[in-house]
Image (cartoon, rainbow, N blue to C red):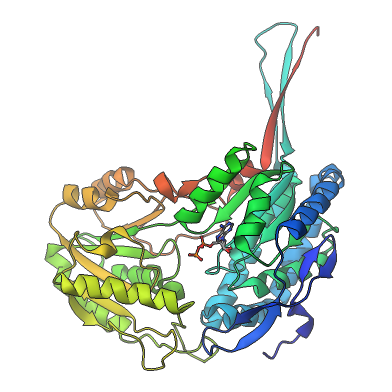
Length: 480
Ligand code: ADP
């Protein structure tokens, strides 16, 4: 890996301002299968120590003014932008996404730090008109304390900053565990945080055994918030583990996004949105369209246009020029896509495009489109998390709303229509935390990201994103 600044490639953990531990667990490049480096295998005891350091660092960090914290965060943002190319290359090497997409993620990740640096100065309280003539009611917002963050491999930078940005802005300190597949991006960001002046103990970054680190994070009484992005299965487990010490939880879990195209949609825009929503990161995002519902009047036309556009996508290693789809993260991810395709085809679906492993081998997969998909197929209920677009045909607005909502998930939904009445009706009826209307890309630091139902609890990004890391204290002053 040819980095401009090779010291950004870190293979140790970061605890209390020191790089510690030695490399045990390999991190591999999914495009080549080659080992990049090894990172430490920390467990319960190291996590306990890191939490103790985060605890000790909390009061002094919280005591700084919002403006002082903002300055440090702003420097962190600037360093991320300055080192964008290196961070992107580290990300592509361990995660697989095309370099341009990785650079886009670095900007997106940095945007959370910039946004919450600005918010640090604006975490306002309230003065509430009192219920008594001799009383005064004041509400202040205080940081909750130590935050534990656990993040996934699909957005190795943004999921870190979307949590640490608001946590640090609020005055919290953090112990963080990135995904085992993609720790190097997180460690590089940590190096930049240190250079920006984040004090020792405020950010601690641990790699190692997920269940041991998670077990300590969720049971240690010093941790007040566990913020997690990942699968619904692990999210539920962590919630259970958090119960015994009544921790607050922030959960960004799985999705099963419907993408609806009505007869009156602008078809070319809908195709563009479908590509952006479905195939970004090779289909490995929790807001990726998982079920594409197309109204019968435009079903064939949409399928043809989509196939034409998808056939122009280029699969290959993310570092190669012009590649729009990298490898999947691992073999299990490929197997899941294959299973979903086989199940659908066995039950009568038709392969329009792709449908199998790519000739490049490894975990490369052909971008796939299936037609005549029906509700009894596994892909209707489970998130594929891969480059598979299943097309369902529907007739009425009522039918499609019912089908779209018929899932335990509720993260993102998308629909295309130019009828203003329908736009309101459908947007309000969809049981989702995020709705893209005539738009396939919904992520931005200025808006609240999060799900309903089993897709999660809480919101990240926007001014709402600070709430997770704030305690509200009500003070009643009597005898005035
Ligand atoms: P995915 O299927 O996307 O890998 P996971 O929910 O398994 O989703 O992983 C998301 C994050 O949760 C990763 O950082 C992973 O290491 C971590 N994780 C997995 N199992 C546990 C666990 N038992 N306790 C705490 N964290 C876990």
